[in-house]
Length: 106
Image (tube, rainbow, N blue to C red; front, side, top):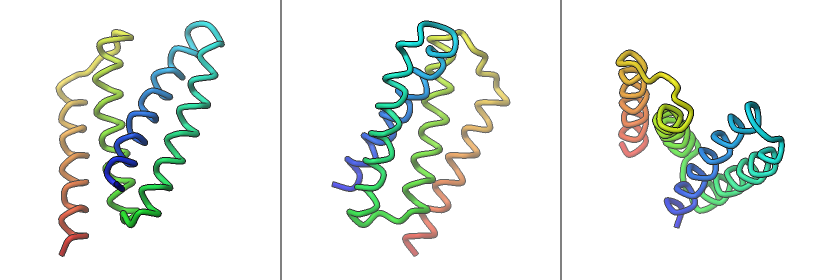
């Protein structure tokens, strides 16, 4: 169940962040999904931790997935750049999270 909580936390955080970008450039009504999304994200993260997931692993996966998904969606939705150097950075973040995960298992 902890992985489901973490998955919801990631989706909610990405949705909140994308809504934040919309709130800055568009109608202020987007502030409501921002607040709701972050509240849900932190609540689900706390449930994942309470279910037994380690904080290093949970936060690493949450942060890496959030960066990768947000960067990709921002390119498609807001036409922001996603350069090869940025993509390499995302790969390095994912590799770092993998190392943390492997370290936690051993």
